Amino acid sequence: MTTSASERAIDGIVARGEIGGRTLQIVESGAVECAVYGPAALREGMVRVRTMRSAISPGTEMTFYGRAATNVYLHKRWNEELRLFETGAPSMEYPLVFGYRAAGTVVESRSADVPVGVRVYGSWRHTELSALPGEYAATHVLPDGLGWDDGVDVAQMGPICVNAVAFGESEHAGAPAVIFGAGVVGLITAQVARATGADPVYVVDRIPSRLAIVAGLGMTPVEAAAGSDVAAELKQRHGSEGIPVAWEATGSTRALHEAIRVVRRRGNVVAVGFYQGEGAGLLLGDEFHHNGIRITCGQIGNLHPTQTWDTLRARVLELAQSEQVTLGGLPRLTLPIERADEAFAALTRPDEVLQVALSYESPSA
Image (cartoon, rainbow, N blue to C red; front, side):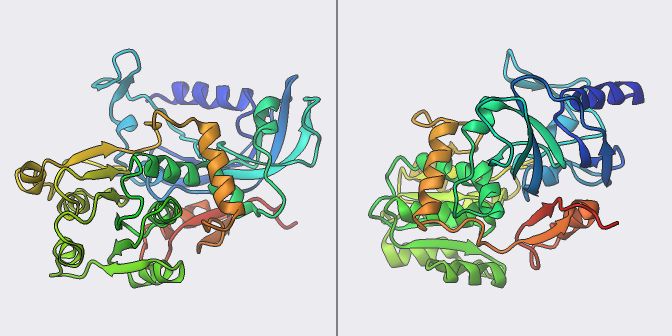
């Protein structure tokens, strides 16, 4: 990763208007910075959005963080034609600018369909100013009654969870469902599973503060205490054939193994977490082999055949506006973009912090 190549990459992003003003970036040391880039001239048909909130992914984006960052794109090259990762020059170059959960206000428009002042949500980088196609902005208007934090979650986190529940193939309707992980993905997935007929809904975690959130949302918390056997406890309660679907939302292969153990014979485990490294604690000769378990990748890069991004976001809006799912009301630490380094550090303390949002109010003089 040469300096000149990195500069060319970032210069192209700036020239396209994808970033502008105060912007979160990660440099080659793994450190997080708040850099400032001048906004590019706005092209015809585009709008410029001033970000009000963006939120850091506690899963994917954290894999880019730190000296020992694990994200596969930093270590291998993605061959799109073969859909394989290959050895060679990595696909991504430093400095890294990314982000996929944001909401803001149109402050400049060269699109006849989108006036200045419209509130929009969507997927753009952690940056103060971003140029978006007018047709994109027009179809991503944040409805009245939903706040910035709701908009951030409509952009990506909600669709992740609606997509994951779609991979349950409705087998959970009228039956118990189990979600491993009371992080943001687990909490929203559990609510969507409940809204689509699962009853009761169990959410498994080891962190008391997160289990308290589960209870506050009206679902059943299950503590993964040392020495406990969650699968045995739930199967004793509902029988060996009682639980058709479980969702694994922690990214831990040990939790994936427990999800395999908890479902019925030929049950379905939907893998939603982002798994790093080798599969420690995943024993495929045990229940997976003897009970014929299906493991389905329900991650957002793998859209369910019945879904599109438009249908996913429409469903999230429906669930949020009908108050069947809590989005922006989930706890979050909000920090100014200038403190982006603190934001990433906070996410390494899951006992204290569920999620982190970044705000972009004008800095004080």
